[in-house]
Image 1 (cartoon, rainbow, N blue to C red):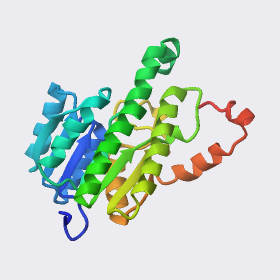
Image 2 (image 1 turned 90 degrees about the vertical axis):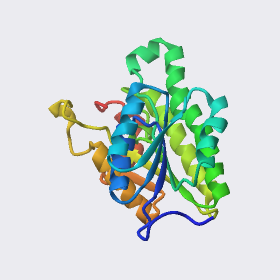
Image 3 (image 1 turned 60 degrees about the vertical axis):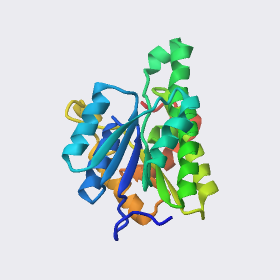
Length: 254
């Protein structure tokens, strides 16, 4: 079945898993400005999800909400499958996830497990459902929001980082499995986000914003990239940290 992208490869229909994600909404705004016309926002029903849908409608996109719970994999087939039966989808953006609280989660194994179940188990289930649907329609991109935190475990966030490491490895393998099918998988590894309320000490050159990630996603889609770092310089920094001897790495204030 033919794709519905424009002459420049811009997706015309989007399915966003994690419909209240700042990065996802920044990406949706950017793609709507480029010609996207249909957006499905998947997430737990809430006033915030409804508000996000109204915001995108005001920008000119037909926007619908899809009930979706990452912690309920048994419902993913029906919830996400229904979204695909309502029309072709050019881009699926897997953008849900939780940071958790490292100190609290270390003392509460059940809370730590919920971080892993949301960020990894839920993403594996939803990713496979969407990948199969994209393959069935014969085209489309699956963009998976990973994190630079998944490159190497840090004392400050190893529970979150380990869940993202698992997601990253899964997404890369899924991309290899779908190679040649017409379905493109792109892994995005952003740095920590900064914003108006971010302390000055946390606003260094190796941080980013939702808008910068959205720009990188659009460029990556045009280039058919498989992995995108945001900012790009982060790739070299993380490569160096990944190969640093463990005895030295654990001394760093990370």
